[in-house]
Length: 278
Image 1 (cartoon, rainbow, N blue to C red):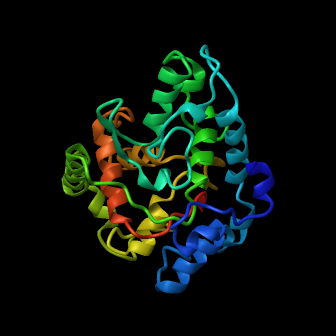
Image 2 (image 1 turned 180 degrees about the vertical axis):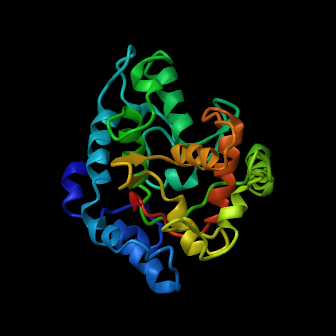
């Protein structure tokens, strides 16, 4: 299915999506570049040239196999899992995460939802490598995340704010974004509160420039400097390390609250999935 479509992008996606949804990631990005003067969006000419051959595409192909293959002690595929739009429905699901799930009574991001599916639906133990290893292009997690996310390429970020917990998580994430703490007295806004800031050679995205922030939010992405596909949770972990703060728990509410706020700040902008970053 996806393997055949990979060579014939764009892929037909959900009804009602924007025109961007019918474009491959490099064209979605080019539309953003054409819409705003941004040093962040254009900072890596090499990455722009390589976008059409993004190695993350192959990670997504492996994820397709894992998603549709019956696995685990229960010998069921992930098609039995609900990522927000019903069992097995992936088109447009990723851009509406994090969201509240009634079966867990909590707001979950994609990584947490995959863990839930693997353990509760497929029957994997929590310490099984398929569940516990979450980072790197060779991990099951990264392959599955990339495949699922790619089904929302070009669609607008639109995490729901209908349930009280969704609103609470988004609001908590906003507090975390602006709260200065740690030994360096940093917050997220220190780096992302205005356009044109740099860390060494890297231009930083501004949360207040939607076209920049949607690219910043577009994970999974192939990080050229890491030679690996990385996730949103990996980016949060990296940001906290750079701010010299304690490691954030990827299974806790704090990281999902941050992600809820980040996604809300990108609302209405097209996702670039998968992206390619420095």
